[in-house]
Image (cartoon, rainbow over the protein chains, first blue to last red):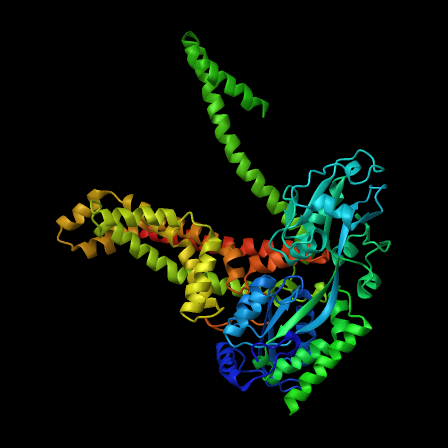
Length: 325
Length: 303
């Protein structure tokens, strides 16, 4: 079991009941007076932690779920994807949010503690590359050009170095802080190696700072999640990205159907198998999966496409069968 | 700014030209006074500017929703910070409970009992001062490894309070020692000469006299603790929680984490909410400090 070939096929094991008892005792007793729910008799608490990008999704899911199940306390933390898995594999949380698939060393850490899990993709996110509103020359950048700008040691500091047709305009760069999943993903997609980036730019863990930086400098360029562009359309201009198949603008549509490349990414949740044996956790995960489109919309993410949706439903069916058998 | 430059020149030329001494002195006097005022102004203006900005930004959301509602990410108009406000009060309350007695007792030992000629006492003293300069995230790692996992307290109010206690303990100890040291030696000698034991001298003479200084130190220490987000994020301070702590074993969040979370949301409504929460945080801080000032005045009158 520990050496399952595919991480989608993690199995529920009786050997894990010890971990379940541990998790249950860690949060028992805090919610004794929770009987008067309308229809739902579920109670207990569910701990979600992990990526701060995925947190709005899990928070929206938790809110909607609690409206129907007031007896269940769902809490969401933001330790980051890596920090979340660290706690998850230590048995401290029920569900881990992740803005990238689990890494091999994290799988090994989980295995060591005997923790098995499921993996569900619950939404899509697009990273938008934005420039100043007054920038009237740049419409589309190729991935090559992005790489030229962002690769480690890059000396590009003027727009005319990016493309000779661009005017002589100082290039000012704003980007994600090195602790964020956004930084990991962008560097991986653009520079081909996670964490590889030039360092002489203004980094921020807070995307709103990047919004202000780019909207305040004429030669500014930055990147962040699509929702931050959509909320600031009046201040920023988004660039189309050309990955060899022509220029594509990031929209809900292009991110959803995967034509916006390579800056579209899947977002995941990893429920712990032993926690799924608890009725409230199982109900929450089922709710999360079944209502993924509404949850994605409410938290300003891009819902799954038909193909992803079908796969998710299949995973959910399999999970249900496991539990009824 | 130009005044400061002029002033600098006056001072720089002064010592080189001795015969101007008589004429130069009033200038230097005025310059000195001006630089004192200017330094004061830097702090006051920034604080005033910050308060005004935050109050103006947060004004539309500075109403009862803020303390009666729980976080709401779907509908910002319904969002509130009740769980963060109660969480902050719980965590800081217990931090005070743990760190103030420990800090004061440590200070009494070091000042009244420890022999400063012994090398280990000097080593302890230097290390306490070093600890005061350790970045807070390091205490977060310590709290996660030892208190949360090692002692098995988990991600609870208890873990957070103990970690913050460790974080501010050096400040409390140093301030309390200064306060004890400021009590004149003659008072101790008089007390001992009248037949009081060392414990009676400390309890009835030294401590009451040192309370004002200790209270000031405690204000500084707890003010630092109440604004901490980094170590608590590491310890599992949550960003979405819809119930208040019910005991030291509850899960929790605190205002700085809630503010940080709101400020990084993409929707503009959350920025106003974050500003309003900052105002609440400042109000709690002021209330706490007022209590300490009241205690200080109360005690200093009694002595």
